[in-house]
Image (cartoon, rainbow, N blue to C red; front, side, top):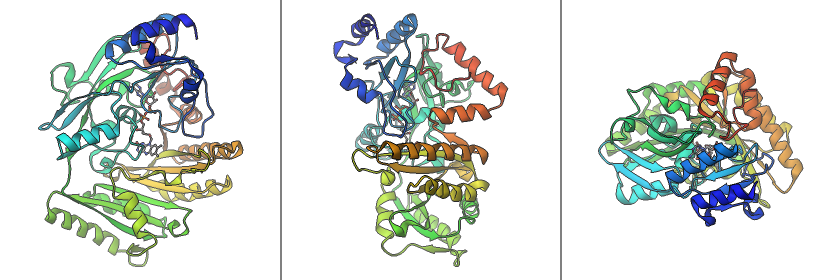
Length: 459
Ligand SMILES: Cc1cc2nc3c(=O)[nH]c(=O)nc-3n(C[C@H](O)[C@H](O)[C@H](O)COP(=O)(O)OP(=O)(O)OC[C@H]3O[C@@H](n4cnc5c(N)ncnc54)[C@H](O)[C@@H]3O)c2cc1C
């Protein structure tokens, strides 16, 4: 990268917040997942929205690629530049600007982390919460929403990107734009009834603009909360149970999991999170959910004993639950999961094939379903642990991920937060006119192709 470009960046953000030192570029050139490192040429950390705009205008003039980054924790290397250029690390934009108690939303800057909003709400608005993903606490709320992430309130209230009331965005040409009610009113309270422009940025993996502020919906925090745990060995039954759960539609969250190690975990476990504001509401919900599972005495049993009881309660009762049990922590070990967004009816085949793929690549399997809103679909996470110190093992993990992504598409599903090879598979399968529409939108918004180029690239 040209010295002159870096000194211009330093004039904008200050010399402490721009770097091309190899030890820093080492970190920005990889992520914790299985994809191979790629080279970032520089990193810059703006502290204000005005600085973001100045950086974008400069990059446009010089035709330098910009990769926006929150915490870089998707595991799919979405913040590792595909075509070099600078990583725009948003962590310094970390203000919680407003919490509206009555209309229940928070306006935050792009660098605000899951842990920061959670701690702030606990201290200042203890009756409110946001939908929290299982990702590490340093993950940003904006990064999660921009990939259509899921949180602990998703089955009840929606995918996290559905909880956005409004956004402030720096367009790839440098203009600042507000979307949602905040484009008309000082209140960031609603996404409707204007044309929904949020879709120009959600799911685009940072290729269409830089989100600088966002309004996220908050929800009441229940007074009572507990888990109901059941185990089964019938994969075929999963769609029927999901239909039953959706019929009453009263749960807070639901996971359906299995994993190869330890041995006791090789069953199918249903983890039902039930919550309520009053004891009566809570007890009634528990009773209604228990009744569903009691209908299948030959196929489903309540989990009442060790060794499963304590680990499952400890893992899933917290907010967020602890997901990373599949990680291989030997020598900086790695783990990546691919999320398949699936229609309900293909779950049994997807489940069985996932176990076969793990075994084919000599990896341990861990499968986890999270119910998506109202049980209309699920996210089936296939996690593959590997030892980063062994290149051959990381290669096997990449092979398993690729085969799983192909399976997902064959079954009519969609790969969530797709790494580059999976993006290509999706684009290959996509309707040609839809691909062209994506291309036209991208070219209109980003004429110099500077925003996270290479991702969602229609060739
Ligand atoms: C152990 C583990 C468990 C996980 N569990 C979950 C889970 O339960 N639910 C879930 O949804 N995810 C989960 N994830 C995936 C991921 O960590 C989260 O979705 C996370 O919140 C992503 O946030 P981030 O700050 O790391 O985003 P990043 O990786 O930094 O960014 C994500 C994408 O958005 C773009 N981007 C980031 N910030 C901006 C911006 N300001 N403007 C424009 N584009 C931007 C980036 O270029 C990238 O394409 C998990 C990950 C791990 C490691």
